[in-house]
Image (cartoon, rainbow, N blue to C red; front, side, top):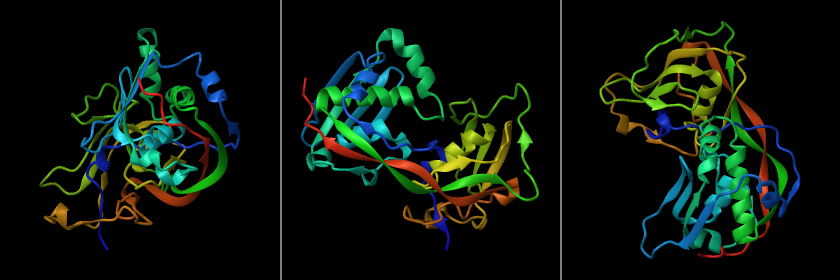
Length: 290
């Protein structure tokens, strides 16, 4: 069966997951954030009838609009692309039913460091610490963590070795979706075969990108390759001239990367269990509104 991938996912990024460690978290989150905290924070109920919103990391802060506070709590503890209510326990009903607009700005002196740390494929420790501090202060949030596992993939080199072209020094990339480490990705275009073209990509960035294409199945780089490469990832079962709309979407697909031709690149993706965490909410209050 042919599966459709979300065209937005072609140009999205995933996450990097490290070893999870279970530990209690309470007001200590706010204490750890004192050295770097948001300068100005506004939390207000969304206007009645507002359309469903989202979450965005800005060049000088964080924004959530028209969405339940669960999203900000999730973003404070998980990488943005893969968080979900499934990984939060102890949520209050109002966390999903009540919609809020959150605006949090970084002090001008901290903008450069903020931008440096949020433009990376690595876990965004600074952003998450600041969100945890904000939530501890405004919502009296107290949580603890318990070990968990998530289904994911390891990106590895195939038995015959990689078939990747190293990026030439000084190469000018076509206009595409710019990655945190400087590479660019160009997704499907009408009239072409279904494919994604990558320029100046490290394998770490490629794994991060694949995480955004795999419907909440994170991908970790286990290739051992340290260079940057130009390559094209093809959708292997799409016939020439086939309409992209005919491919069926299945976010619950147990093997969402199966139809991508990694073999042509000398690579493989292998199912693995990735250690992570579940966040248990011990206490939370509706935010103090300004």
